[in-house]
Image (cartoon, rainbow, N blue to C red):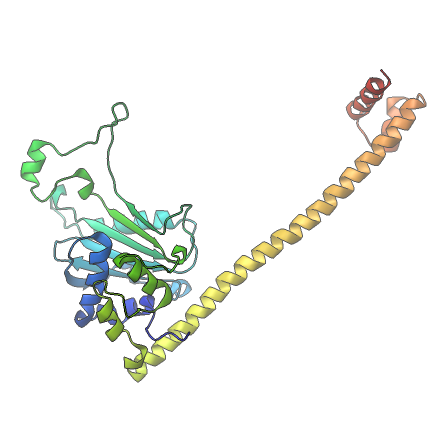
Length: 310
């Protein structure tokens, strides 16, 4: 089926940065984090300064929402074994980049890191994961809470976990295409670049109107087609690398199997020669010379013969 809507990654680069389209992102964020979100600004993150190697492999979008939180949306196509580390680095850098000199620690900005991945990150059965930082006693397993003084002083907080970065991972390819709630409708769109008529999740109807390929200007359509072609090359390279790795593993396995088989066959023949020479009363030194077996290996063969004759 030919896609009618532009892919979300390209939309993040182009259309969703337009204030007129904030409603789309606000809908997505509201559905994901279960609170009404209003975008205040689109900011430029340091990680947006992409190298040529990851031009088509990843894209990110940093937003500041009305509550003051920084929300970083990252989309990654190709697999990355240290992606969890990158999530931590990205959120930590945002905190330090947006901390003004001289401010007290209670002015640290809350960061929400949203990661849309199109590869199998980690090992788990779900396709949406949420990560929070809680502290529990190692003896009593009690949850560490804010003190009375902290509650009075930090009136905007209720839980310790609200201070620390909050992480979301959407493993898009793990979704089974059965949309059972509003978040599933969004993930269906992220996976298929399609919005069904019956979908009513917040922001999706606006997306269906504004992300229509046919509404793009000539320049944007050419840019989009170029981007998609580049994306196909990246995805093809990823599949090719995986296939080559699998083929290399099979070839190496066959070669190793043949070598091991030859070694085992040779060892068995030498052991048989050693058995015959032992039965003929030959000394270990002579047997070693003709078979290449060590004295300890020859003695092991002698033991087998003796046990067999008992």
